Length: 262
Image (cartoon, rainbow, N blue to C red; front, side):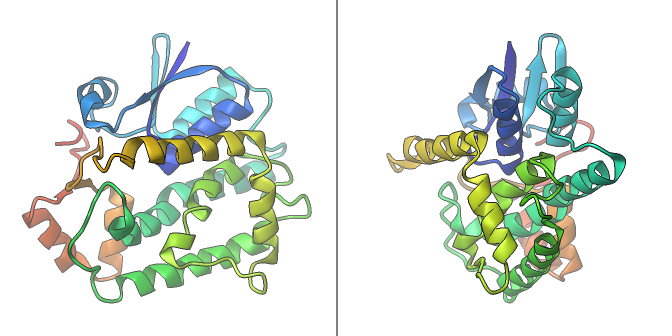
């Protein structure tokens, strides 16, 4: 039995869940970012990050590695397209989703999280910088969607990687307007017709009600764990003073690359 150390709202966990469902695999799920499950998560991943897949005696961390493992272990239906060129394209979009796209969305969305009720305001021009670069990525994505309506000639890991991020843009005031992104809008509608995506969207919606409906969050409500890509984007845009302030206030945690999260 596969076990996924999961979280309903993590884009990385969502990607893996959609791949599991697309492949028709049964699995057990642990909401491992809940405070009550912290020790259990650290046991399988000292960095205390999700997702983690446990398959018998095999433990795989990092969403891209999990997808590769699932593709090797359960090759059909495939999430990597046929041919080296399309596979390289799919891997590029998965990497961009997991790094730059995730970093920007994470860094400008903190003030919208239901688990963290911030009383401060974002640093000046942070949101503008993030929205500007998101639109640049969307322009690239618009041109990358091919005649199939997908990114790589068929439904693939590129689409599953991108969808959780693209579907989170509206609360950040990054809108997919028909005039600018006609192919991307059609892609978004097509993705929402896929069974694996529909099941995941329903799970996210149901979990939001269950986790936050009472007004009490099961998650850490102040400290945020910052990964390298997210820090890199901040520093590249001149927000180092704000980040140092977050560290000094104890609201930011940087995982130890050897021993895991503090």
